[in-house]
View 1: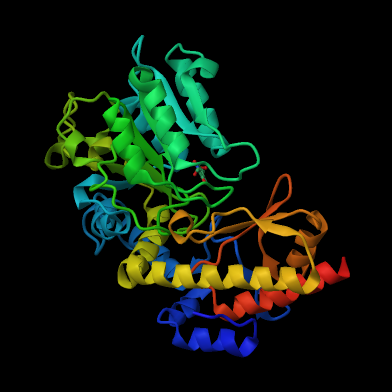
View 2: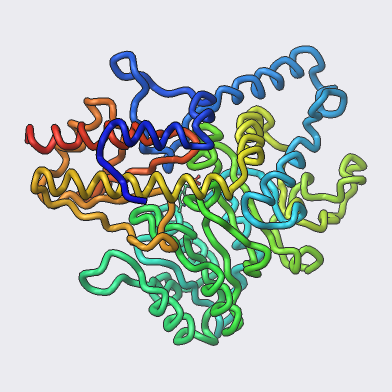
Length: 424
Ligand SMILES: *Cc1c(COP(=O)(O)O)cnc(C)c1O
């Protein structure tokens, strides 16, 4: 499609947008009486209007039924999390028994590493991406230390080549092969949080398995954003947070995937009563008999008040389906890219999009390196109702989330950006 940088053209795209009505199902912060242009759904998704209804239902069940709410309300709490299995499995390309929700993301990655990072004297190394999300870096270091290895020896980061912004697949594969017999675990992001680069999880998983390693993914920026086929790709395990693209609310629960092939294994794990055989959970037996499925990694009874808004969101995703989301995501991200290039030409600026330009290597985020402008431009955008975020040294990240951003937002953003640069 040939794009145009005009209000009329943007509005025309909005009219043709199959998902346009979803925008009204979200609550936008206001700036001068209008919706802000929200580009930070990759950090904290907007609140769906239905979230409050789901939370109110739990509050009301608690008020009227108290402890009986565990069993005798419309959505009983004791197996509330099981309502996620079906819709979530579709979002991440899994079987319902392979997914569950619990805890928070870093906690879950730690718990999953208890099962899936089993270093031996000769096979103890972890491969991850350079500039992984800081929490992941701390996690790797503490896990390696916990097992008595040295981070500088045991953690192998795949680096970008000099002068390049993204990691090459060939470099990942070459390193996996090189570390070979010493490789215990590959644990990569599905989408890099900084550049928005999407990694080829299928090929990475195959390569890891070929040298005898376990392969897992941190899907914080991938879940609800890209097409995932975790089961078919034969990924061993994965986890994601729900408050970014999945709009579940600040700091909210994490989702986990454990491949079916591990459901009957005797992998060690840190257990708790919610992972115990469902039929016998309340018999309070002394020995642990895990559920055969991702639910077997559950520990505590679940925080129902936080699951409620997550469930509201998951049901919306189930209704839309990933296909439609991805189709709009591709088009609106390309439109944003076009607008950025147009403005760049008009004002003779010098910013650079560091996110891969190939459709299959990016999703819903464009990271823009501001060579000339810097922090003052970011501040200008924020003052003018454009919510983006700033990452050192000089990058703003723009995520036009397909469920609730409009093409008109992209056009308006371009005009504000242009003013910001001209005023500079
Ligand atoms: C956002 C994010 C996290 C956050 O972890 P929490 O435990 O939810 O605070 C972790 N890893 C990645 C890659 C992220 O993008």
